[in-house]
Amino acid sequence: MFHTSGIDGKNGDDLRKRKLEDVVANETVQTLRNCDEMIYKFTGDEVLKFAFDYIVVLGGWETFGIPLPLKFFLTRVFKYGLEAHKICGSCQDFLDDYGGMGDDELYGNNFDDYCGADTYGYDAVVSGLLYLPVDDDGNYLRKDSNLALMNRWIEFTAKEVPSEQLEASPVWETTEEAMEARGFSPLGVVTGALGIVTLLPDYIGFGESYRYRKGASIKHMYQKGIIPLVLKLKDEYLEEVTNGALSLTNCVTTTGVSEGGIPAIATGSALHELGFNVATNTGGTGINHRHKYGLSKIYFRGANKDFLLGYAAAYSSVIPDLENTDSNQDWLAEETKDEIISWFSGTGLDYGEGEITDNATSGYYEYYDYFNPNIDKLLRDARDNDEVEEICELAEVNKTDLWCDAIYAQDLQGQVKNTKNQINICWAKEDEIFSYTYHVEALCDEEGEKNKKIRVVTIPSTLSGGSTGFTSVHAVSGGFCLAFYGLGFLTKRNEFMNFN
Image (cartoon, rainbow, N blue to C red; front, side):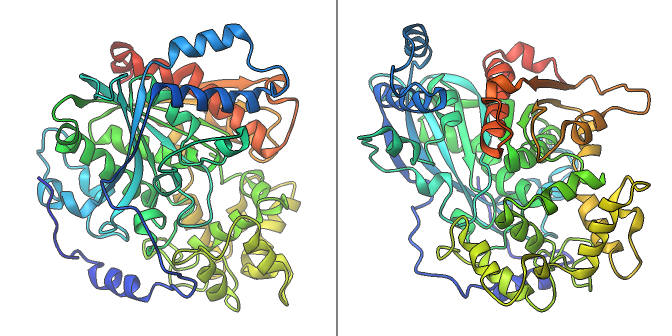
């Protein structure tokens, strides 16, 4: 069933060395849940209470409560309870079955492209939170279910992830307490309570794989953190856990907001190539990093500095597979690189949102001094030059060219433009981080034609409170993608199958 094998492949020695040399200076005693542990079984009433608590806050109805028609609708829609499990898996588990095999019926010769033994993290045991629907008596539903993949947005510490944050016995005295139950993702609850098997991955570098490097925005790092869990569910695990009651179809939706949109897109296309029928839903995700206003909006905006430091750390020779690795073109400055990287290594339990930036700005350096001065200059020159459209038009050999290659390799625009699986993009034109012009309009070719598998829903400002803030716009974008597309695809298999 599940197999393991040693580290091999052309980069095997390098991977072994890097794993042993990972910086864990900040590591504290780590207490993790056991892999494949059943965490808690939620009754239908508990699920409904959470939904009510969440929607009260989302809709601003703390004073008057949820409107009765909506309450009636939710009571009818949320039919099931949920059983929550921590699930673990590794690409290495499947090497003997699928690695190097070109004629496998399901995974073909594409397995090595996404889970092969020659890239960093293939041997990482990754984790996630699994929701299985149960009836009023706590029994598993007997059905073939589609799979909902809900990709979390940005986190900074290894335990602030779905499989570790879900309370083992949620008793919420206040709405605020319900909001703090991060593992109990509202999107995951929605799909699970509709009777759909739902997976919320932690990603490599978090949860069970906390000793590995974190790879913000790096596509294959997300793929290796998610694909093994899907293959494990599809293989025999789900049927074993539920005694044959539940099994998966080949239909998957991948949904993500903000950073979560990167794995939604990257893993969605990979699963399509592995033989699954996939629809991807994303909102508020940076698709086009080539245009100077794509990446520079993140770099110069001033907010979300924690994310930018973590983003830069991933492109500073911590991942052996990138084009600028072990060059003089790390994104972080040489003088402070090791210190910054250490903040994002190990458990990271000593640092939370805001604390990383506080550490950075309380030292001897100004914030932008933490970045490679050549790359900083490139970004500033591109921003200020009206004749330049793409950042790397101004790249210099031996200074910034390899960094440009690495950034461009992780760009999502080409992947989205040429997608073979359905991608639904929800966008708020008020989004001041990832502008509509440089991320959505850029998906058209020179004649303005767009791949027919791309659908764009523009969210009016009235639905995000007229705000241009990060949280409201991005959350509303993601919520609408789920409501407009995700649930329909998950519950209508025939329509779903027609995408491919």
